[in-house]
Each structure stands twice: as structure tokens, then as C-alpha cells.
Image 1 (cartoon, rainbow, N blue to C red):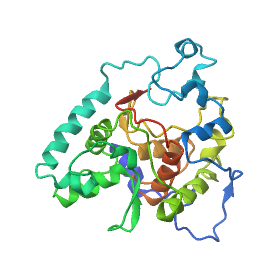
Image 2: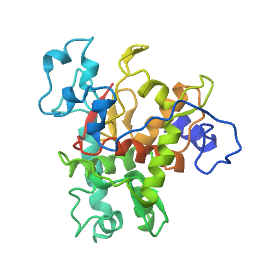
Image 3: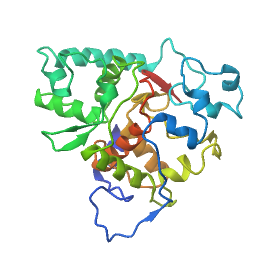
Image 4: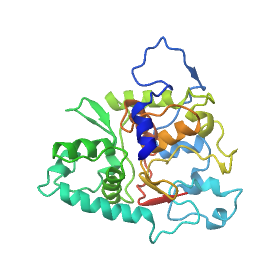
Length: 292
């Protein structure tokens, strides 16, 4: 992680860290209402009709630079090689590490796998952990459970994300399903929704400044896509940055908008993860994935 890791350790997220005092001045984009299901995008960008079935995309549209953004390229930026890329090597590494940690089944049990079966586990995270009294994402759970077994798998590290990719691969094709209708998960969803609309940094931008209000418009060399369905392919292999967890993606966005980032696993990032995962409910897990 190098310089980025050091920056994450020392920086404070100025966009409104969870628990910050209410008397601190904040600027917000208009707080939108979102349906916690991927089909809610019909009222957001109305592109869901084009990408609702990842197995039946219109490849003619994919070849049209004016329309390919409508396919919501979340997990296979062109040119995409579904046979082998860096994400597959990460999955292999993750399998090796997972089996080493799970020799007695305790690692899987700690993560919440039923009778050691990983199928569906990724689709149920983030989740509330009663013994921790907070909501955690899968990568944070991996770090915690590995530490209990005497191993270090720091959230945001390559090996942590590799284990996450392997675990997620056991749920490929299964729809994301988290319940944000009540309790701590609903509270995290609402905090994440507010953070998504909180302006911060030198450019005074919120996540929603682009991903809600500028969908379909050019941002430098790309066209902004909807936030719906965005979580199902993480951790993703980035051809520029190797393996990237969702929280590292948040940190990259913060750096791009001149906002101080947080460490992976921070409360604010987890709240954003809950919010975006809610927007992915109903969409299938798709790993290992590749993006530019």
C-alpha cells in the first residue's frame, strides 16, 4: 500500500465522520430518496433496463462510446478478458490463505458461514455483529477473524482483498441481500445516505454531485454511471492499482476530489458501504472482476 497506507493512517475524513458534532458546519447536496434495491435505478438513471441481466448485454451498445455507459460497466471495462486477468490470480491467492486460516473451521465460523459453507456469505455482508456492537463489511470481518487466529490480514491489503475475492467467488451469481429496513443496519444506511450527499474537500463535492446529479455526463475521459449495482463486483482488479477493495475505492475518490481519506474499515466508509450495498440489493455477485 506504501504512501497511500501512510496517508490513510494519518488523515481525517473532513466530509463528516460518523459521530462528528452536529454543530460543525456542513454543506449538502439535496438529500435524495433511494430505493434499497437495484431496480430502484429505473427512477434514477433509467439505464437498469440495459444492464439488469449481466449475461445478456447488448454488445452493439458496448461498442458505441456514446452508449456503453448505459451498460453500467461495473465489472468488465472494455477490453475485458473473462478467461484470465489479475483478479483470477488474486482469487487463487485468497483460496490458499483461506484454507490455511480455516484448517479447523474456526475462520469460516467466525465469518458467519453456516457449517463452513461459504455459499451466500458475500451476499449477506455488510452485517451487524452483535459481539462487536457495530456493522462491519466482509473485509473488516476477515481482518478481525484472522487476528483472533493469530494472523494479520489488514483491511485494504492485497491479501485481505484476495481472501475476500475468494469468499465472494463462492457466491457468484447470487443476488446481494442485506436488510436495511430496521435496527443498526437502517441507522448505518441513513448515515451512509447522508454522507453520500455531504460536500467536502478542496473541490467542495459530494459523492452525489457526480453519481446522482451528473449521471450520463462526461467527467474527464469517462461518463458517470449510476451508483446502483456498484458493489457486486468488489474487490476488483484494477489494471492500474492491482487489487482494490471498496473502501480503497472510497479513498481514491477522496484523493481525486482533494478530500482527506480514511483508513479502510472506518465507520464512515462502512456506512457508505451499507448505503451502496443497499443500492445493489437484487444484483448478482460478479467476481473476479477487472476494471481499468
